[in-house]
Image (cartoon, one colour):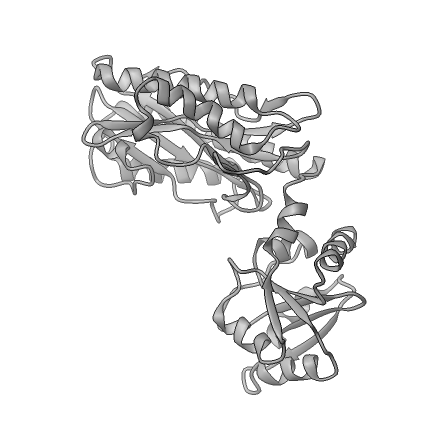
Length: 358
């Protein structure tokens, strides 16, 4: 109920009469319940004095242990009647929704009965950026699983394996080492010139000798995620421009970690990394933000980008992942998961940031 009460404080501050929440990370965060996002809508309504689920009959058993009201519907009746009953004796001014998550299906059912629909994602963000000690432990476990999994197979990177096969091996190790089957994302394995694409999908390309290889992967432990990137070399004969870029990225990662602290503007962390890369002549090839929040979602608040005015606080977990991407040549990214503590910034990732030659 503490989370519900905090949400209600945010609702009152913003003049929101009702929050409408659909299956996803926010619903899980406040109820610890998972529902399918399907053609059968599920919506959880938070009011000042009431909590109500509208959901299909077949999902109703999931409400066990929750002190909430519910309205159910069958495949025959459909959801419209349940929504009409909910709104019949209620008169809302503002209804807050999750603009990044709610579909037109749910929005249409709600908007028919609500005079004003507003985005309320920021109310959840204010809560979820402040990780509890329990949440921190889960992210740390996800980091440990991810690191152990890569370490167990990294020797295969220089064995004539394809990007796709190495990614598959990594997925198997993640599951063996305790990750949930729903990974944060499919591992990125980008070798040689493919490394110039930050979100490359692994292909049948054989990882060759004397290439840089970017590996971006993560684990899911009890619904909390890790997100790590390291860059490896499959030989000593690496292009000097790539080596210079690697050193620039390594220093930028360190500068951003050093800048990170309670009370610091998130945008200044980005600028600390970006200035290093700019000064080294690779600024035009650093084409994304320095990092993003991490927890129940792989990308959540706070955003570590140069125009972000969010002030870092104790309990924030986010990534620091500067990168340089040189078309036709390759790329480099070094990504850590970090935690803001009362007096410092602690890296949850422990793998070396140096260029590892295999």
